[in-house]
Every structure is written in structure tokens, then in C-alpha cells.
Image 1 (cartoon, rainbow, N blue to C red):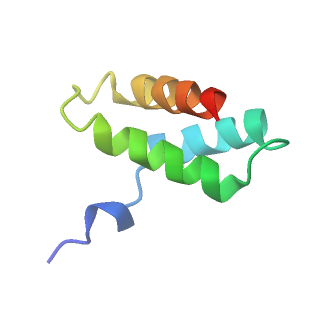
Image 2 (spheres, rainbow, N blue to C red):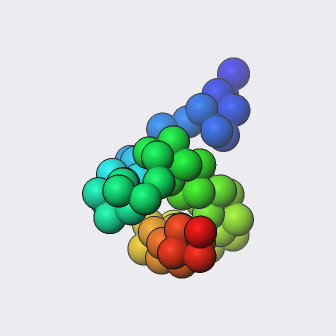
Length: 67
């Protein structure tokens, strides 16, 4: 049996969360940043694996800047 997708640890997602918390931490709580990054990851599920880390971070950053 496998864990549900949201419970699976993705190192690229966790690294993006860490970088974006550093960038947006004065404006947004870490939980909000994490939620946005995980949402971006989910929305990009069809993207090739090699491009995924960069695209997730870019999409999440764009969404966080809009807040």
C-alpha cells in the first residue's frame, strides 16, 4: 500500500518550501508557503520530472507574490 500523494515526501518540494519561506517569511506563515508550494506541485503533475523542481518553485513564487 502506498501513502496518499499529499503525505509523500518530495525533496524538491521541501527545498522549494525552505527557499520560499526564507523569501516570504516576513509576510506569510510557513504553513501558507508550504500549502502554496504543494498546490503548485499538484497543478504541475503532468510536467516532466526533470523540469518539475524549477517549475514548482516558479509557480509557487508567482502565486505568493500575488498574495
